[in-house]
Length: 419
Ligand code: UD1
Image (cartoon, rainbow, N blue to C red):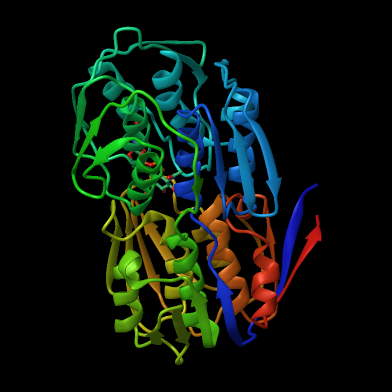
């Protein structure tokens, strides 16, 4: 059933909001869990539809899954290899992460081209070329990728360009491979460190995650474990930006400066008030902020593309002009037209968005085009004067759990309604 959010904007928000575990850490970790033949229990699995969709693929591979609230147990004793069709991969780009773990476990894999959020062409050439450099034979036919890893050998992979997913997938493929595999020019996102920490807890020997070079010493077997995944830095950033717009002692429980350094700098320079303690970050809005002149999205530790729409929603109300450059995904300005409907003054030229701050946004009917664009529109709706309707909220449910309930508890007027 299609649903929408109805928001009556302008309410001041206070109290605590907890940040869920990281979606982008969970997805590769779930894919990596099939490397083990025992059971794995996750202690904090959020109810994101992306996680449910990854679980559907695991069920296809004969993983027995039991969910009790946020406790998710995978019985991995009888995993089998299956062709993963478009029906599954279309819902989730992260399905491509399974390529690495299937190759490690079964020496072959057949998977349809992945889908995912509509933010650009999102090719998979970096994944394919990296596997080829380790000896995997790959053919592509009728939308499917056929991989044979009978002759795959540990060795050296130099990624042509930094890719989070390719780093994770190739890392998983080498965990059970005899000998040492070294990956160069890898992505350094905290989620990669988390995947390494998960696999190492199961007995893998991975070092260097979080730096530009990762080394994997192959092991024979992995063991079952219980695991708690790190918090979601993108959700924390979304809530922080909301707090900067509307907060009055709003505490984001679990937020840490170290994972969102650039966002904290922006908020600090924009003259927002926040303080950190052991539990998280408490933030209060302090009137109209100064526009942050220029920010561009780049791989970690630079500013994340996954916070770009939310930052843009924030900057629409700043005093002065800010420029945001989107370097990662060519189609990631779909929220601009929607923000303009609400009264924002934004001009897009190629990969640049030039945002002239306005004094007010006004409620409007807006449409989410992807997960983070949806989050940006919710922020805009919450701060706008009057009623907004955010449509296509199935995108938002991919990576935020019952967002309307969490924001309502802070004092927001936001309801989920059928379309
Ligand atoms: C991951 C995140 C996503 C985030 C993105 C960038 C997950 C589940 N998703 O996606 O939320 O927005 O990192 O931080 O973790 N590219 C190629 N060829 C490839 C692979 C990527 O050209 O084979 C390009 C992409 O189009 C993009 C850039 O490389 O421009 C980075 O993409 P990548 O890091 O691979 O993103 P994902 O792993 O898909």
